[in-house]
Length: 310
Image (cartoon, rainbow, N blue to C red):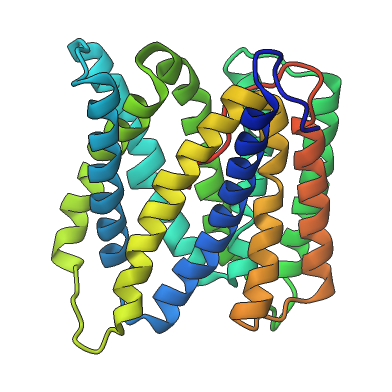
């Protein structure tokens, strides 16, 4: 599963694999960090998101301009980048933070497992093809999803149907972003696309969030540090590690590792936040992740594109 592309050296393969594993840890840990910020950091979702956008956007644009110069795109390309960025930033982040606030962090982390599963049927609607293995993985994952939805209907559960609905909405939005960002990223360059789609795509969210920003005096210093770590870790370092892994190891092989991010979130939520999820939730999550791994397993061409840089 970790065999490299023919042009890579053993040292490049080791570095790429280390970067992918770091990315998985950062994406899984980011969910737990955001949950802690919302619950214990005295910061609301709008303040957290705007802080993350500003930090990650400035760093990514600086890296992009340094490496590639200022983009010389036509008006249509700028509009396409902005519209796709709107999906991946304004809509996704609004749904995702709401989902984290409404669910245990371990359950919210399943968004990383649901995205590659949703990419396949959405890709079919857009005229793309899927292999039998991908279809089988999707069906298995949806069986786990249905089981998890059934659990939310039981009285007294920490996971509710409405709360989990936000996670499904966030995953659906990011799956659409994934489908449309691949052709754009290949045409304009990966780092320029991510940098400018973030900056342009977050504008509507920032304009809406400004009246809701709060700077509470009782917010602990670690809360502001956490916002910076979330932006730099999940949106900058993780993306660069993931992009290098896809280039050296191959996109299909790299994507399989993404299914470990929800497992990291589940483990950290239990260890750090002391969340105690019922066995039925663990079982449903396991089936979803198994289906996601099967749908993304190397072999047949994969529908969609790269997985989520959160």
